[in-house]
Image 1 (tube, helix red, strand yellow):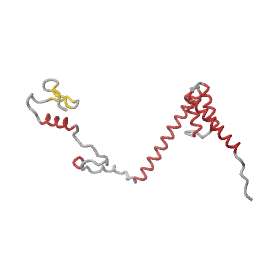
Image 2 (tube, helix red, strand yellow; image 1 turned 60 degrees about the horizontal axis):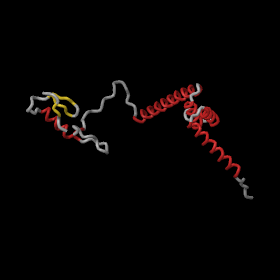
Image 3 (tube, one colour; image 1 turned 135 degrees about the horizontal axis):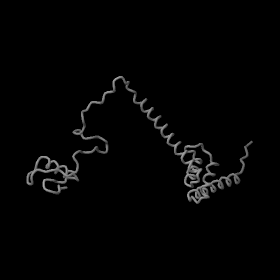
Image 4 (cartoon, helix red, strand yellow; image 1 turned 45 degrees about the horizontal axis):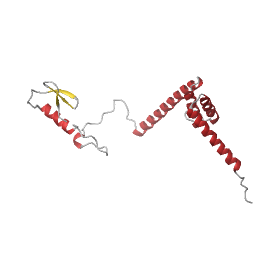
Length: 175
């Protein structure tokens, strides 16, 4: 990639407009800009193994812990972080379920279907197949295509279970 001459005393390198010395002179900045433009990158990125070339590794000391604060063990910090993440996730799911219930009660078919699926799977609410089916039926009555498909699927599963129970022969215990 060659630098483009835009206006006198200005040059664009890799999308950046830079001032240049008088035409005909190549200063150190322009030569550096040309090297960057030709190489495509000033630094090498880490390879697949994640290691950074040695010349780009810094020799900075690790930051010191604040005065008066005891250093926590990494395992304890990790467990605390995981507990916080789990609590945050539960709170978020609870908010989503509350909003979905509110919208479903107002008659929104997509929310009714979503709430029904949550009751079927137990996602964020206690598992309740009967209540889940009721919400999906309400959604299907409004023309929600996914709800209609799910009702057909639930009916097929119920029919298959009924057929397997009716067709099953009782097993007699051996004397």
